[in-house]
Image 1 (cartoon, rainbow, N blue to C red):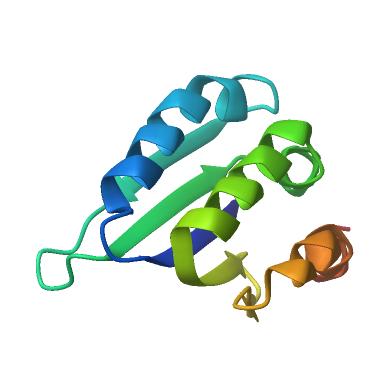
Image 2 (image 1 turned 180 degrees about the horizontal axis):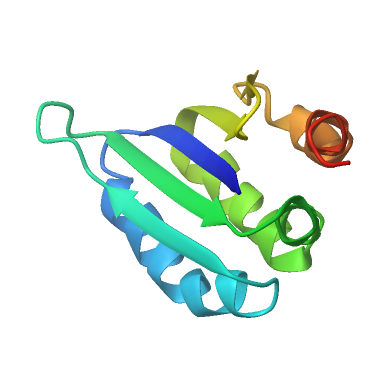
Length: 122
């Protein structure tokens, strides 16, 4: 099992637009890459925060998702609508964080995730 979580701080007034984008992308993002449970949370105390939690059945499905075109579309939307993003990948053996504050780093998500997940999948 692989858990991928995004903590997103949206730009003021952009939260609803990002939620709409997530809603529109949801069927495309999770229908093609295997067993995934996805949830979107909106903390009541912080009006600009969104947390997206994805539980993947295995590392292969999670990696296919991270290198997909729909995921790149999602990264582009986050780039425009968010002030900061923290991505966490957790497995049964470890957890690793990547600060996506500099969105040029999104090109490096797949190699980073592949390294983390290859260390846990034998």
